[in-house]
Length: 118
Length: 112
Image 1: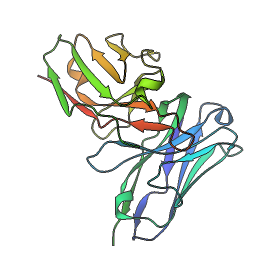
Image 2: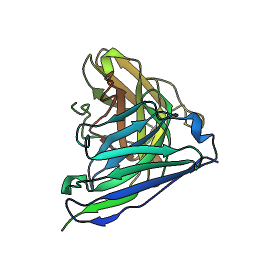
Image 3: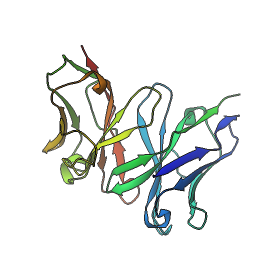
């Protein structure tokens, strides 16, 4: 059974940093591109970042470029999102999601809440 | 990159059909056959319902179908059931090496 489990969310002050993790199991993690998608409270889904299976290709939404860094460790079946210079507008539930094909995500974690507030 | 445009809400009675539109541009929806649809119940993670415009993943009822015409993609739910009440989001490839994916604004489906 495919499972994605996010962790690392919490309350952080504006300007602070946080590192999210996503532990994958039930599939060959190293064969799939992975993504982070976020959802602000009461709002819609927003794609944040993607990383290819071998980390050769990395993409970011303009809203996080230069502040967030996506990475993965295929030996540990884990995906990460390092978030620096956090802003109030980064407050959201962050989901990790597996690529099924172009622009489709077939498995999602349960999400981890990041709250940026003083 | 602007979000794709979806109606804020649609509704229908059990057994009826509803269609949700997802309007983009020739740079995203209209330019590629890579549109997906997600169902999200309150407090839950999104679930993939349609990918590559009209393909259904295993386990998704055939009441759900997808199509595309020009810059607008559509999700149709036939034989509406109470459990279909949820938020629905479209997503499209945007063709950019720097910004490949864009989601829709989301549609609340209400079963009357």
